Image (tube, rainbow, N blue to C red; front, side, top):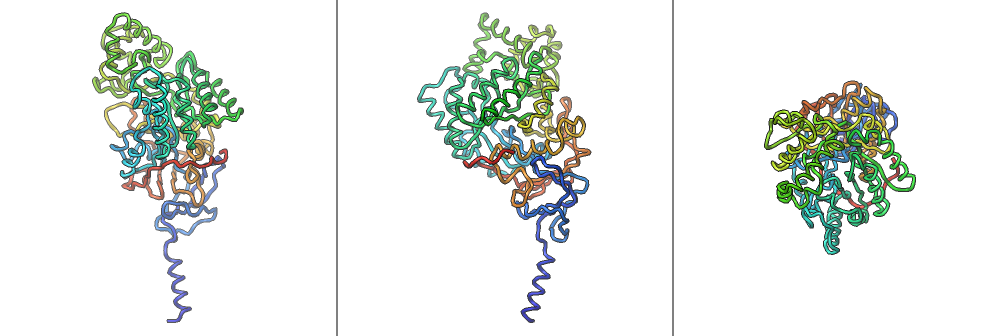
Length: 529
């Protein structure tokens, strides 16, 4: 056989052999930057996008073709505030993946893992459904050194904490998180936070802040975060930004003006937000922080002292009236109660009625003490205003993030954000209420959080980037999880691709587990999105 004939046969065989592992064809592509959608085909080989073409890519050139006609194709969603503590029990992360989420940032609210590197190594051995990254937790570090103490650290203790943060940053943490609202972090001074944040900044990290106050005092909480940005010279995220309690509804006008002022002054300050008018946290937040100093046993001793108990009761009444209680016992809702599971889904009002006590803040305060002594509970607090939710959402520098925990259908009644955050934005706030345009909503879920993380290879659709993709129907996508029935997956999200592998196929979870542990390496920040 002649050399020419062999060459012709080889060329013919090459043309017949698939060039791509996957082609997504016929969809309207949103590249993640906020630009309008364009009809384009996307080709994937391995874990990378290798072509984005305005002209059709031949189907014969792919091992698999996904027909996205009538659908929208976007970068995989990136969750900047995710509770991944259950990753060892739920490595598939189905409640996230089925929302279109492909990458999550764990360790928020000061609760990041430690020792950091050992933890990340362990997670890396799992068959993951999502990409996972973490922050180092200020609260975790402080508790390692000071326990539940309300005192300031000594100079030696502060140095030890700084070394621990530096170690975590060099092992791949993307930054540092605080939950200054929570015990024992609330006992820390701003100067202590600045000292540890400077260490994270030295490695190119950023700072996320559950503000010290989100109700009365929220303006002081924002001001403190801005001060930390300035003095630690670190980018700051006002995480799950919100305004708690009727007395402060509408204050987002001022908090967002403060954010704009900080940016105008050259500080890198932004926010993230979940699209709900209820928060979720522990039952213990209904107790004044001073009463919880030094741990549960100390609290138990204090409530036996009549004078201290009276002060604790007064503090609980104030919180029920003016903060997380929302001034109405119907607003605190039980999500997961280990010692009395029949309360799950019911309210503090319901419990007061059951116990035959006045359904008032004064009547319920002793029940709060009893509940904390029994081990506490996970709660949903219906104490936010829809006007603030929408105002914060529309701000250019607000990313979408869930603050959700990994979940599986079960007996608890968790916050619906665990299942519905991202499709809720696309359905309710884009299609139904027109609070955001679709390109802008997708930007807030993709390129904006990727930019904050410094991930140049994710968060956009372009040749050479990682193949994290979601295909959804903009006409039908919506959340189904409710406060009463939260264990419901969304609809309208047809395909989710993680690192080139199809993990959601025609709306159903597959056995593919292509997620990875992502570690931060110091690098220059990208351009403003």
